[in-house]
Each structure stands twice: as structure tokens, then as C-alpha cells.
Length: 204
Figure 1 (cartoon, rainbow, N blue to C red):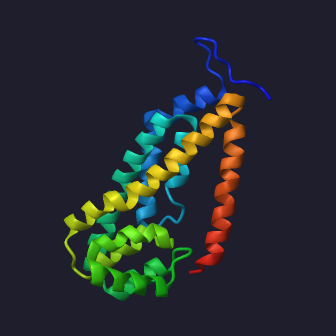
Figure 2 (tube, rainbow, N blue to C red):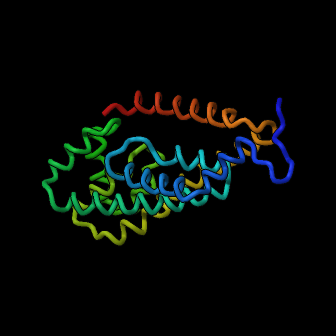
């Protein structure tokens, strides 16, 4: 197995990838991904956050912060839109997103009505997208600020967990080799398997 180079001033494959993951472009991708997934995209920003962390833990932290900011912006957009259009229309729009069903939307409405934005904390445990909670809060006329405040722990816990696990994985690989594909291929395969299960489990 090829060892990662430790010579001063030399940047191998994983070093170059880590430099990119720390760049403004990578951080912008994290923010845009967070925004997109909070609206209508159906792949979680955890995928990008974890890849950033796998190549550089510091980059992973930046990815968490950027994705959080993007998610909050996206949640605010969904909240406002849902408060202004007919509930049936917003439900139909979400129903068109893969792995989201009418039953899931109705369940989130009940949770939001019963426990308010705090119900978002259980969303990741149930595989329930954040956008459904943002829509329910808007439909029910719940204030935006509490929803934004609860968004932080509801999103950050999972983002950080993915970042930590990915950083450990990346560190283990980089000790053995400097080839980027030793990180990218297993990482992509793991997410591919997860989404194969997820879309089968939650058929919209």
C-alpha cells in the first residue's frame, strides 16, 4: 500500500483535494447544497460535508457552518412560500419530491401542531426531510424565528456526526495512501447503498 508523502512542501492527491475543500468554492457548494436540499433537492448536504471532512477536518467544519446557513435560508423561503399559497398546493409540490409522501406530510403537520418547531429534532431519526417541517410551520402560521432557532440543533447534530465519522475515515485512509480514490470510491459507495435503501424504504 502506498504511503502518503510526508516531505515538506510536497502536495499529493489528498493534499490537493484538501486544499480545494478549504477553498471558497467548496464552501459555496456546501451553502448552495444546504439551501437546495431545504427547498426541493432530495440529496442531503451531509454528502458534501462528509467529503470535505474526509479530506480535511477543518474544511468539514466550514462545510457544516455553510450548509447550516444555506439550510436556514432555504427553510425561511419554504416557510414564507407555504404561508402565502394554498396548503394543498404546497403539499402537492412537496409530494413531487422523491421519498416524500402525503402521509409523511400529514404526519409532520400533526407533529408541528402538537410540539411546534421542537418536533424538527426527531426528523433526522425518522428520515424526514427538513423542508416538510418548514412547510408545516408556514402553513400553520408559526413564527419564523423559533423555527430558525430550532433549525440549528436539528440540522447541526447530524451534520457534525457525519463530519466526525468522515474525518476519522479520511484520516485512516491518508495514513495508508495518498490516492484520493481510496477515499472517494468507498465514500460514494456507502452513500449509494444508503440511498438505494432510503428510496426503497420511503417511496413518495
